[in-house]
Image: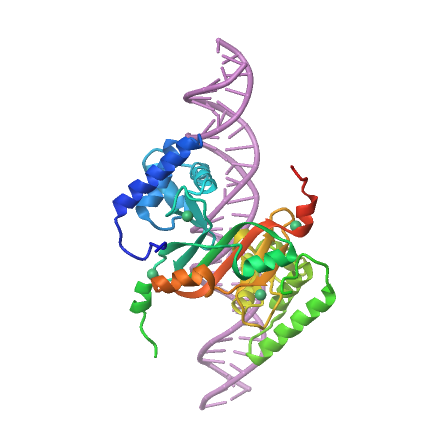
Amino acid sequence: MDTIGFEAHDHKGCMRAALAAVEAHCTRHKLQFTPVRRRVLEILLSEHRAMGAYEILDTLRDEGLGSQPPVAYRALDFLVSNGFVHKIERLNAFIACTHPGQDHTPAFLICRQCDAVAEAHAEPSKGMLGRAAADTGFTIEQAVVEAMGLCPQCRESVHPCA
Amino acid sequence: MDTIGFEAHDHKGCMRAALAAVEAHCTRHKLQFTPVRRRVLEILLSEHRAMGAYEILDTLRDEGLGSQPPVAYRALDFLVSNGFVHKIERLNAFIACTHPGQDHTPAFLICRQCDAVAEAHAEPSKGMLGRAAADTGFTIEQAVVEAMGLCPQCRESVHPCA
DNA sequence: GCGTTGAGTGTTATGATATTACATATGGAG
DNA sequence: CTCCATATGTAATATCATAACACTCAACGC
Ligand SMILES: [Zn+2]
Ligand SMILES: [Zn+2]
Ligand SMILES: [Zn+2]
Ligand SMILES: [Zn+2]
């Protein structure tokens, strides 16, 4: 399966692999993977959840890596631009990509109860959206796909009303 | 086609029809379609584009219908909850629904050049997203689908680089 | 009639998210 | 060495959104 996020997994390994993939990608494309950028990605990877920019900034500040919003936002811009991190529009928050390096359109499953987020793949050009775009002559360059609902765990813990 | 928004159309008629549909829906469901709520919807309908809450509020203020943010946000909450208006997460803005009264999951085509927005239908349960949700046991309750790109008009006006 | 209640509105204050502008550092190209 | 591009540090501000409380008014039971 593609969508980890609602299940336990080898967290350390997943983090190490993601960092290695990003490092390789930056080396290959001559991108500067600076300490601040690296640390922001590490924070997101280690928490493995959607975090607000100011929440990330709090951690940076504690570590002496910058205390003002632009520091966090600039690092996030870099990471988002290069596909290492995704922004969850619905939450005004950011989350580390689970397939770094690969070119992909992410889709998210967001639990309204526990705020867990799972990343899946979307095919923006397929389906009704692609059809509508083609019919009107619209050129899709990028897509936001975010489903809200209940994750398996929370679904069970909700009391069955019927 | 379903997706108007990039083409000229009978604006007055479209506005009248939408207001009538919303009025009917409110009467049938015993919802209070108050002056503020009505005016906010009218503003969105007449502009026929995505507008920020504060932009709407400016108009309300000029008309003496309330000058503080909560006035606008409460009216928008009502309109969004009942499906008469949709929020465009990507723009932090609101737009009047083009199929009021019908139960539907909207998808949007947003032009990055001119900010025009067209509403299409999405089928959240279909496609890869529905598949991923089903596989993980996630229950989709609501979905945000927003495609960014270039509308037909802007696509032509952009200089052809090759 | 009259108090009660609930929904809507008006208003103040504040919180949360994001950007602009400018100063400073650093490392490579010419 | 000098110039330039990129990244970072910092202050100020812009933009988006909500909490809390007071007030109005219409519907309801008595
Ligand atoms: Zn991803
Ligand atoms: Zn959950
Ligand atoms: Zn709609
Ligand atoms: Zn356009």
